[in-house]
Image 1: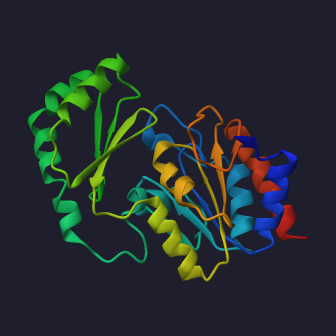
Image 2: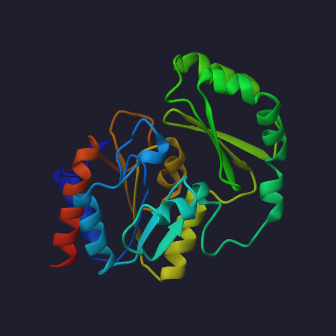
Length: 251
């Protein structure tokens, strides 16, 4: 994966920005650094200031695993779109009660094993459209992950289980993922292309399915299997990427 600030990466950024694309960003690990406690995540002021300026020029979307309400509480401006729950909660989704009901077997297991999960250091975050099992603060992360994996064995086929950074996520298999959500936003915005920036496994559906006219960027070039077109080495380079975008937008 080439660096975004390489000659090919900067050329791709220039060409894509010239098409007035939708700009879509994951939140944790992309716009906000990963922190020990999920609830403590915040966008640094330099990132927030640049993103707010971009939103005045192009349609901006936040596409996160968090709920929409959670993301709204962490922003001091209103982007054009906010997508939550890994794509399941977005402005144009048709309400599907069955999607949340598909998670009831998961909720029942979590209630049954609640004490064991607490003792293992696993925290449960039920966001209605998806459930996150966080184990970053577990005293033994490997043991906590094994316990989660064992607990999730034999779930119905209509439940999708996927990983993340010190988290195991569960959503209804029928619910839209981030790739479907971003495509819907591009169509709704009438944009000719999209720039999507993410950092985690749940961003890979966008990286995999993005048309050649889009630009995809992964924050972190440590995963050789990632299908992102370009990468940044670490979160500290995000503000610089936004500066490049602003310079191109302003001509």
